[in-house]
Length: 499
Image 1 (spheres, rainbow, N blue to C red):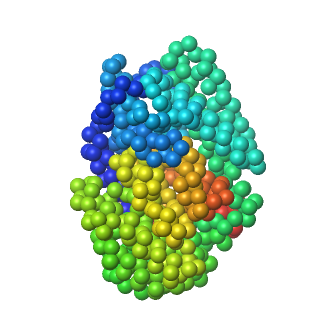
Image 2 (image 1 turned 90 degrees about the vertical axis):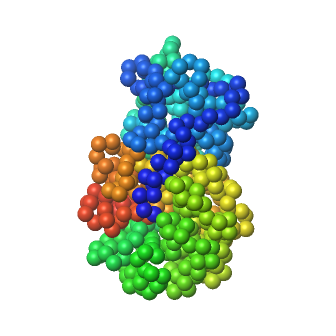
Image 3 (image 1 turned 45 degrees about the vertical axis):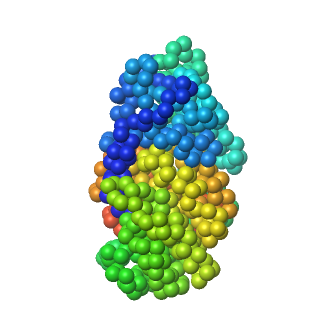
């Protein structure tokens, strides 16, 4: 997809949200107290809290979600009331977790506060930073328990010890300010420890399993003079994939436009994931035209190993109705296009893998477009039967994932238990978008980009039901001239033993 859409999506979220939600007042309100990490902690004003949540130009991201499935129950529930300057939300008659974009020393994350796993069921006052750290530490311990083969590094042990010590100090604190300050520092350390565990465990566990893995890169402009096939093979090794985006604006509907590129990729030893319709162009195709395009490309390239029949399917721009656009007709909705395209690939190319990519977002846009809500409502069992891989497109600067990575990957597996999971598209703060949320390094986007690639490519491998992925979107534009970014990707392949 083009990242211009992401920036527009953030602006649309702000416009739809109207600054904060205004739910009906039930009387069962949870009051949230937010603190910074300085000293014993200083309580943030309501205005300061929103400024932190919004990052550098983002919108409201608060949501109430099901603690188990992560489906959105209430979008933008925060409102001001009672004690001036404090945000609160009403419990909607069922247990809910609170999710929001919030920073740690590792960058912004979707932080999910689920009150010990049970969710919030009634009124109360919560020190956000402390409870967020407690819940994140509990999830980290659960993740360690299902990874008995993880060999903990010295860096991990230091971060874990810091998290435990800060939580002990928070428990011993006599004031909410103390609990908040120590809680935020504990959250920082838990995030660091979680990231280390995921990145260290992922390649090692995949190599030990001898699992099928995908280390992928994306090429959208095959007319480039960059010798990408050889570079892609060098970076990814024997498990390398290239995702070729067949863009209507470039090919004029002629599959032959990509003949040389497909041949070059396969000659270099790469497998190919073909994408007939990028999310930026999906809305412009009727249901019939969408299927016709998929058929034309699938028929033209029987050698392609996998087909992405929908890209970022839950993005609000795909069916319209956001960013000032008009929604498509009911028959032309992407859910119907997926059903048609997946069935066609399954029937005509039974050995090819069928991939559907979702766009990571939880509270960025309206509930109906959030990953888990949209999937449950739009991908029925009959359609899922024709899908092999569900992939997640992640742009951290638009919709952070961060600390929620393991939680989200596990929830995707629970939602699609018979399918494999992958990272389907990845990128960070390129020139054509405005950064809303930072990751890894707030002052050096190039360093952050390298850290993000190294982490996400590795972390995605740590699940027996995941194929990995990555498929860096700006491969041709960013990777050839960035030795550090090359190293980040190649090192993961090296740890897999595929070079």
